[in-house]
Image 1 (cartoon, one colour):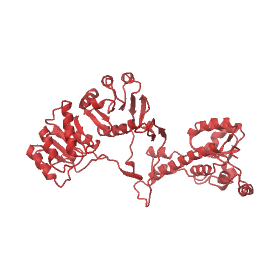
Image 2 (cartoon, one colour):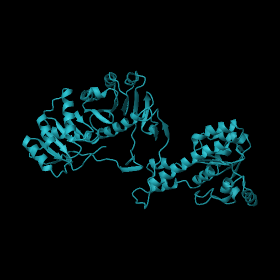
Image 3 (tube, one colour):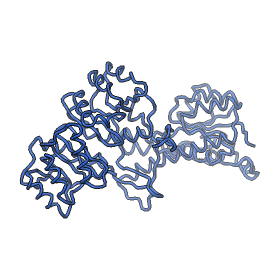
Image 4 (spheres, one colour):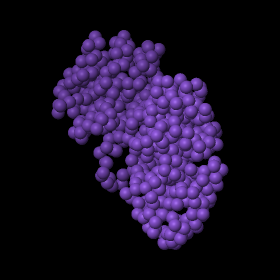
Length: 511
């Protein structure tokens, strides 16, 4: 029989908000309520008659509440098959009443971990009885309805009102699937916490992210797309249309790049297709934006812009002259917002501080690859001068600046810069020489004189040609990881041209 009335319900929830309307509907239909502890108290305060689980089982809560519902009379009432004569007979023999609805809101494990709580507090927030109840009810969806989230209370209340306190098989299957999604995610988060810094023999990759947000489409209109994760934890969207797949990819690249400039002078970066087409630091945010835009105003059209300081009115007025898709900032002055909101579809994101994953994951072939996130950034202290000439203080500052941008640019890449300003970059080329030539040509096309500029490379130079080409263009200092068997050739070329070269020993490929 597809439609089944709810005769008895077990409620065991951590958070009690939003539960009252559902309880009211259950009471209206004469549903027998079972509960424990704080949930029981809440239900009684709502005027409901409740049977304590320990009265049903004849066994008290023990071990500080660690064991409450784990009993055959509870799980038997959920799991016995109403269409099996043998199950019906055993339920009657052992005095096991049916439980047709299970409502569980799990202990807040993720939230407790995120709060930085001590390990013992985190461990106590690993729900045992609740997750077992969800699995049992979801397994027996043929007969039992399961509610696994506060987000479902309103919908289930409406459902039971419309169907006079009963549910259909398709209703129960729907909520069973949601319950298994809840338990799977919960177990994954526990695994991630307990297994950190521990080698687990034969461990498989376990991924879980929620909620799911459907996107208008994927990378192209013929591709479906979904974002899994909680964007609201990272951004407040203050204006504009929904972020697209491509927006999200660019925003991710922008946030990662600007993390290199989170402290210090006002900074602005403009990105297109995940690569920076303009980056600058200056005394004011407006000046930083103007300088960043001058790097490549053509590519900046329709791009993603990110800054490291609150957007003031002067910067907003300047920004408003350009068509761009997304602006990300830690804050927006009250007088700046109306200016920026004058374009209907322009997306404005206020960024919140958040810790990013330590691992990066990507689908590949018929599987998944994982790696540590590239969290290493070189400073002047990491530079090893290998030429007769050492970089000046200003050149060193420019080299640090260029190396940060180079780290976040698609390989093969060459970055040309002065202190506080990107001049040009060659991105995603199949040879480093092509990347350098692209950068030099681009710098010239936007009126930049490269005399006295610096160069950063994401990987070593296998031959001295790049150094020779850069020197002819006026480049005076170079930063690269080194590691080629022909490093000496590049160093000699730099010495012959009177250039300074420093090695970092760290490669930053970005594919």
